[in-house]
Length: 251
Figure 1 (cartoon, rainbow, N blue to C red):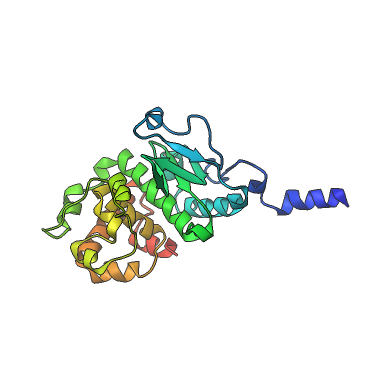
Figure 2 (cartoon, rainbow, N blue to C red):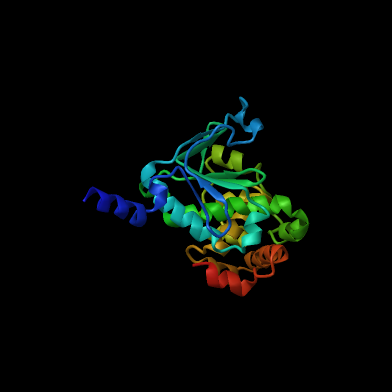
């Protein structure tokens, strides 16, 4: 009987329940659930930034694995392997004494997950990956993004803030769609923080649309312009990323 139970767990229970990391079979990218020494760039450990990450609760391993694999499946293999080295899913991530839902370095994405009851739903986990990976791609392929046209899509009286960190510190990091902001050319409060955060909020919704995102980019010309600019950015990375492709996978 003990042997039968052991075989059951080995073949039925996801391996992530036992392992502190898993590997995406499509891309070979490691998904790590525990804090590691030097998992952040060296400069992030200084007094000002004071980077910290706590290991994921084991109860969240399987769900985290499922959602990150789903997110990865929406990209051609080479887009991942050419731009990403590792993914961390941690219980919490802190910088500047602020809790971050996710962040990224040159070729690593970090996703926070404190559990569904704390708001870290399946949708949240997947969108966070797309949000952070879009920053990695933006840094690696700056010539593919027309920043001037992006800024020109905003209303004349609109101006960006001082970045994502300042938005978190000031409590201006809401990601609910806002009609007044939509009129100005941004989706939500967090999109006001910087061009990059604005770009991120569009990217996460192209890959996994929430609420009435599709309706909004059809209704507001400024939003539609930005949606087309970001689609063109991704299409330059890989031709599979067409408008129709995003409509297909954004569910």
